[in-house]
Length: 536
Image (cartoon, rainbow, N blue to C red; front, side):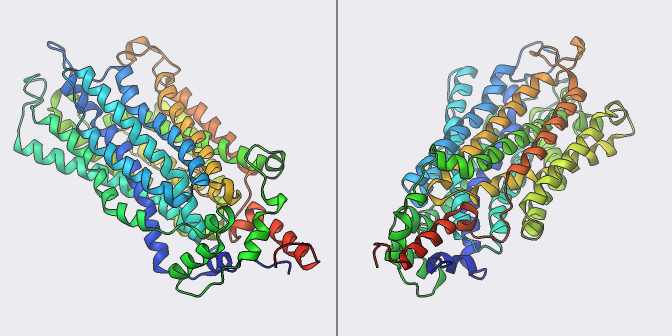
């Protein structure tokens, strides 16, 4: 009768929170742990790479990565991630979430280890090898975005689904902290074991030969938690929604979820056949039916993620102003290479601990209470407010005596990004599209976000250069300055707020209600009860 739902899907929707939910969060979250660890740790070791491979004899300052090399080392993983999001998102709908899921983690493990083993006879050779492996690391990380979100959404009950998906994404916070702590420990051990003078005292002796091992150990450590969960990921059963609604195997879906939920479930082969063969339930991504039903939704998820990541990934532009202003990182000539790495890791880890990590867990706590729409709207609004609060009196914040206020404002922009659109843009695409294109649509949305990250990280790296040629970083041309860049970023947040109105609220609703599959299912069941010639 109308209103019926497949028993296996209903059982998942109304299931109480069980141990398998937490197991799934840990297994799915390890990809995001590795993602955050990699992106955070590479930003920490870039100055060390400059000292090790780009020292210039007679230079008054330590060696630094040339702008093109720095952009390549940091940006190639973004390009790999974008490619992986599109490719594995599509593959997850074609072959199944489980069959593809192990590939992405295995690729991350191999590439993390290989990044630390980068080789070459020259500086250019080592950096080229590092970039090659970081592309494939990014490719694997990219696949984890659509697959982890889709798997977690399809395993969850509808009452706490938002919190579970947010918890997977919040593993990024632990990855950031782990990256900082591993760097602090490794650099601290080597710093104490191999003491060296400051650069101003002995330019060559300030970078001990053993420093070349430090960055390699840090990068390779990112593979450890991924290795620990690889077996569990390979053993996870396929989600019931893919098996029933896409693969059309009712018996296998019921068998898999009977084991997971520890209840007896009927296979309902006739109803699955009826639903999946219905014409209204078979439109593709590039069809007029998809455009009519979900075109605005996909526009909303792609634009909001794109605009969010422009603002989010550009916020590192003014970290150097903060750290130098408050004295956390002294002038580089007064430190040796390992001391500089240690201080950078300590400062950035503290910022992440205070501003970044809490926002993730506020989202976990409140997303199924306030809803996705409210949190995303609030996040964009508060990011706009705090960025304008930094930009309008920018000269005030950067004068001596006002640094604490700068740090507080800076920390709150990160907090409301994570307790806001940085979390919700990941969650919503996994909830509002049909099962047969869910992974693909999430991959497209995530790739749009990563394109925004590239714009934010590299476009604004050049734009934010000082308008005074004397204050421009080596290798760059003049830009519009940090203050004007902040105004532009605030504008991105306002646009993100406006595009949020294209995205529907999914709190407390089943995936089939959000995607429209439940309506189609009810229509077909009603047609069957009225005497249509469908399998009985």
